Length: 186
Image 1 (cartoon, rainbow, N blue to C red):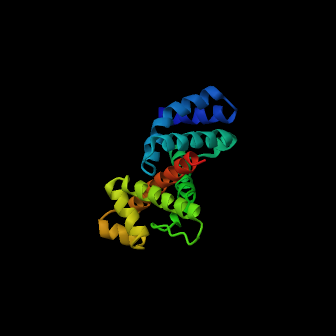
Image 2 (spheres, helix red, strand yellow; image 1 turned 135 degrees about the vertical axis):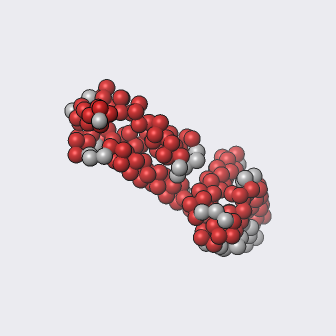
Image 3 (spheres, rainbow, N blue to C red; image 1 turned 90 degrees about the vertical axis):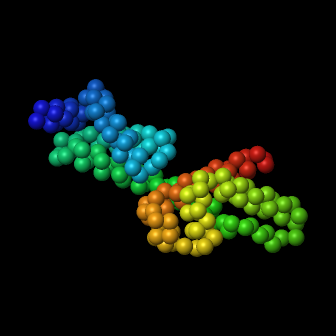
């Protein structure tokens, strides 16, 4: 009961722009937000970014905090939504990469363009071969075999959420490899 009263008092103070109270709330919940974020996102850097976004949203909406009945529920709902926003952003970010065929065929008579296409194809192949085994299997089943996430989950005896996480990892790594390739070729 004392903890609930402390939290309620912190919320009232935060609603009145008390940065010290916000700091106390941050210290109480930051480890929990990190832990909960890791349920959705595996990258430590991304988890910390999500946690920062969560607390920024709490601060920006501080005037409404007095209306919150369950602070745990409120914070974890924000965390879940921020994690899903992050996953959505990441899955769309390398959209052009996910649309690339595994083998790139460039139908142009220009030798320079053909060479660039071949090099890019090698960059993609190298990025795929550098993936962890499960991630590589998920990616290849999706891109080469054309299986849906649920079909891949069944075939590999993993959850659809795991398939999605593995695809996000694969696409991020390929996006990085392609960025590095284009940065080095300029």
